[in-house]
Length: 320
Ligand code: NDP
Image: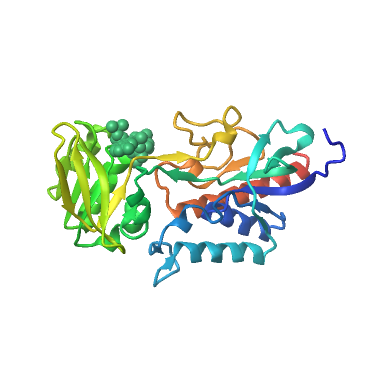
């Protein structure tokens, strides 16, 4: 081991740079905690992969996801946050000497009094080239974010879990027709959610159906090619929006065996707060939320995490 390795000490380390991470940074910086944020591989997080954001309060004319994240970054920097491109590769939360130890990019070690985890979640995709090509141009992984752009139009949604069922009924209120593609002959969603889908007249369910290709005119989505995996029949649906709702994966591999998480990998925080099972480690945003998953709720929990970190530090310094 290199004994001359310089270890940087940080009062408040934030891992992840979506709305949760940047909001935590704004609050922590204003509380003079001199936060350092490591952005992860996708600075700005999931919102940098969307187009218009019309539901974040304060933007009456909407804003694009990438611009909003640049604004949040600038606001965090204005109060002294150090924003750095880097990826946490190892954590030691055994709190030796009262601090946590985090390795960045396998090379640098930092110690931190408080750690705010805002690593988010990643939407699962089908993995089709055409899905990637039209992502943001008719293909979306968030009905609540993008459904409005398809008001009065025909859309399709793939998935059969609670998210897909909830999003299908949400879309049905806005859109003319919703084609729901279920790959098996039954839903995974809870009975109550399935009941709601079955009782929504403008949702047409296509069982045993898989997506073959997203069709488009080179600019935007114009249809969907689907195949019945029982009859092998292939057909094209006329749609302008395609919603993928096949689940999310929380970005928590780094914390396995260290932080409490549920069976699907979401971090578990104490009731009504952002504290994890380790003192001084807080979690906010989608990494601990598989229900709401909105930029505004992520920002709200980011604020909570910074306030809790500040109180934790104050109590520690006061010898409580
Ligand atoms: P789930 O993992 O529960 O469901 C994913 C769905 O996508 C399954 O129906 C699965 O099909 C389908 N799927 C996966 N891969 C493909 C593919 N390649 N092609 C077609 N279909 C595919 O994820 P959810 O996001 O729906 O839910 C995650 C968790 O969050 C669950 O525990 C859920 O209960 C919870 N939740 C609760 C809500 C609430 O209570 N209001 C709202 C939303 C989520 P198959 O069934 O064949 O495997």
